[in-house]
Amino acid sequence: MYRDLTKGNITKTIILFVLPMMAGNLLQQFYNIADTLIVGRFLGSNALAAVGSAYTLMTFLTSILLGLSMGAGALFSIYQGQGDTQRLKAAVLHAFGLIFVIAAVLNVGVYLFIDPIMAFLHVPKQVYPLMRDYLWIIFAGVGAAFLYNFFAGLLRAMGNSSVPLIFLSISACLNIGLDLLFVLVFGWGVKGAAGATVIAQYAAGLGITLYTFIRCKNFLPSRTDLRWNGHILREICSLSILTCVQQSVMNFGILMVQGLVNSFGPVIMAAFAAAVKIDSFAYMPVQDFGNAFSTFVAQNYGAGKEERIRIGIKKSVQLTLLFCIFVSAVVVLFARPLMLLFVQPQETEILAEGVKYLRIVALFYWGIGCLFLLYGFYRAVKRPGMSVVLTVISLGMRVLLAYLLSAFVGVTGIWAAIPVGWILADVTGLVYYRCHKKDLMKFTGPPLEGEL
Image 1 (spheres, one colour):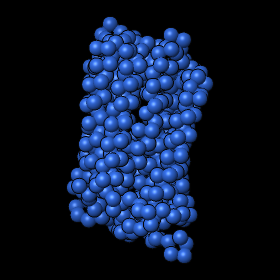
Image 2 (cartoon, helix red, strand yellow):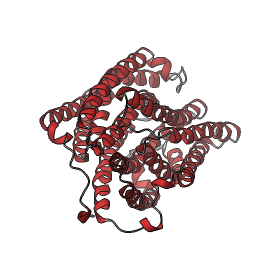
Image 3 (cartoon, one colour):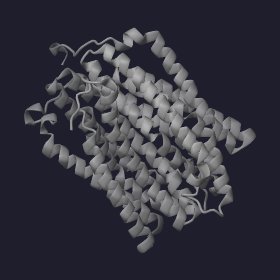
Image 4 (cartoon, helix red, strand yellow):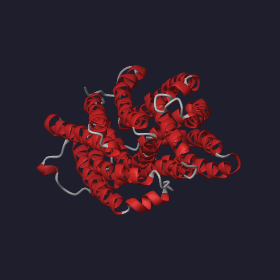
């Protein structure tokens, strides 16, 4: 179903659009958790540490493709709001070519530099062979991540958030089934868990690609549209590359924190691996809400509906804060039972450290919720550079404080640094919005034909 986000009740429109996105990403987190849960329960703490650390690396790599697709999606939404099908098709063509080339280079690069990457992450000797085996297989899923994120971004930009959910649901069920088969029945260990994930990723990536080519030809360029458009390529590069920088800086910062965590040994690695899965699952819905909010703003920006954007901002902030308060309470109260999903009761050190992490970070989910809204807003109004600034502040302070505080109070300093970074970025983003509100909302319209 395709939704026109420029019309109708704002709260209802955003909620109905975002629900399939939330469900889809919760499923995605669920099958990531399935890897961790099965590995942690049946293969031991070293395997859990290997898979958890590899997950952080793969999140960084996927974030590059996701950022490019999100940036392109913002432009797709603006053209959709303008009703400009010609520019939309040209944008799809140029964005696909650009992101395809980057994905191919990235995929080759990670295989060539797998050992230097692991050295950078300070992977302990007892975890190294397991993590290398897992990465060698999981890197094969980069192509699938490109296909799924690109075409899911296109469909969502057009107002269709349901179809990406369908393919992700199929992928999640397939991943869990193959995890159980490959790890428990065939005994393939971490290689089996990685193989299950890659197969499931390709099921989603190829499936949504075929669907788009068969059912959504009106969004795709025909032979007559296969021509160079320098203006649109520059627009895509401006939005996509800066959004990619924002996403990759965010996850590179997390990767640097992962390296610091790894230096504390397998127990802390395992605790962090399990706690981060819970953490990601808890605040993933507000990240999806930020992405849906971005599509809403972009379509209305393209349509020149400033007042509708202002009302949407107020409604979105209210909904985000309510959700974050609820989720924070759940995670703080049930931190230990949640950790026990991944860790055996006798692993008392891992349990204690994971619970400490969750109870420190979960109190400040409202900070990351507001930050996702700011990212989405600035991307939608063609100010992706501001999203980069906020990410640098958030992650820069997080990394700096993590290394500084850990020298004095150990790993607790790493956990405490996370919310501080969120809050500082929120304050910066809100101050900038207050100072430049009129300019940010001002719609300049499409370029003149002579500029194409």
